[in-house]
Amino acid sequence: MAPQLEGYLTISAKPDIRVHYSVDGPTDGSRPIIVLSNSLAATTHLRDGLTSYFAPTHTIVRYDSRFHGKSPPSADADFDYAAGHSLDDLADDLIVLLDHLEIGRADLAVGLSIGAAVVLIAGAKHPSRFGHVLVVGTKAQPPAGADAAYDSRIAYGREHGSRALGRQSVGRWFPEAWIRANPERAAAV
Image 1: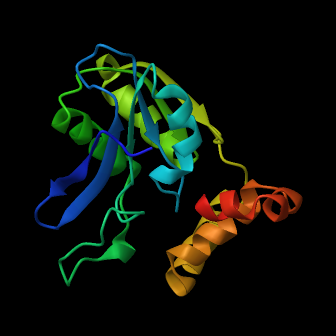
Image 2 (image 1 turned 180 degrees about the vertical axis):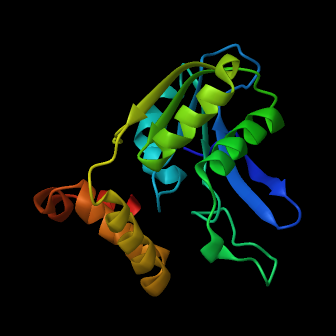
């Protein structure tokens, strides 16, 4: 199913930061609006099944976080990716996207993993913009050693690339038996 609206939003011209997004359904408020924010190394395609299910009755807004999926790397040759981006920056990106789409209020924002932190922060900073916030696959207080695990994933992604990091993530998210039984679906994630 092709989205009804798809494009790139310039978050910042200097440094160059653009975000790819897709919208299935009208943004005029005639249907409930669901916004989906993804996990690290995931793309909008992670939610294809969910979108297919809800799109007949809801408007689904999906986007690839900075430098993920179809959101391109910065065109600035001197962009410092190692400096990282704060969760506040990612939450602000979501609000800029909603403003661009002229969505004053989403009925539901669903975030998975790091996307959960993004929707929590966006919801806390802009409570009137969301009817509900649903967090999936995250914790309010990370366990001891979580920072080291995240740092190792970041290092792995830098060394081996985002596709390898994505394959590693699929291996953490799904049992090996499911991956073997569903290779096409696992590859699509």
